[in-house]
Length: 171
Image (tube, rainbow, N blue to C red; front, side, top):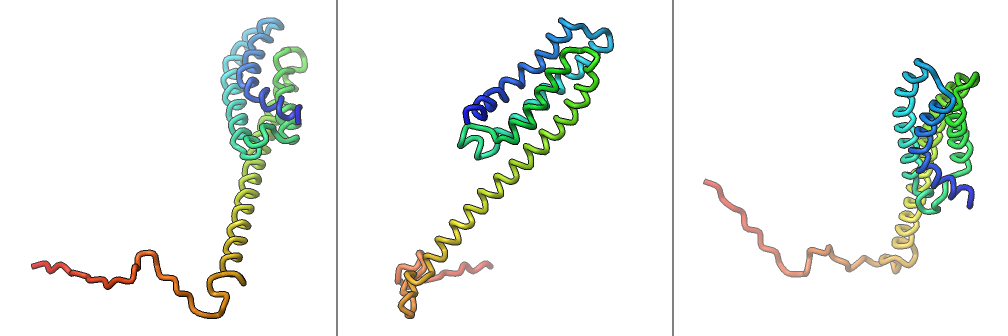
């Protein structure tokens, strides 16, 4: 649980730290002219994609309740973050890490969406089960019609008085 909670905090920090790391890596290891152009495109895309996935993960009710991400998030999003860190070394493997980062970004997005939908479906299912349980309890053997007689309950607007309806005549 400690690792998953720490990763949740890292998920928020990574939105800023990883794009900055791409710039720092470019300054240290150099990237040339095309590297500069790639950096101008990559840093905003990384910032936006990291932010979107962090928001999707935080949107899950179980993440907010437990204050921890799932192990799937740790694996998929963690691998994506490691590939972004690998890109910033701008060595011979930068292309491999770039392709891996793109593929893992797509996997992290769909994994987060899948978990969000699944978590929402579980919560709706639990709510419906509770609703059905309460409805069965109310109309079950201990309900108002349990004695076999008719119910003497009246609608809430009917207080037993006569009602006079006045229709307006239009000329």
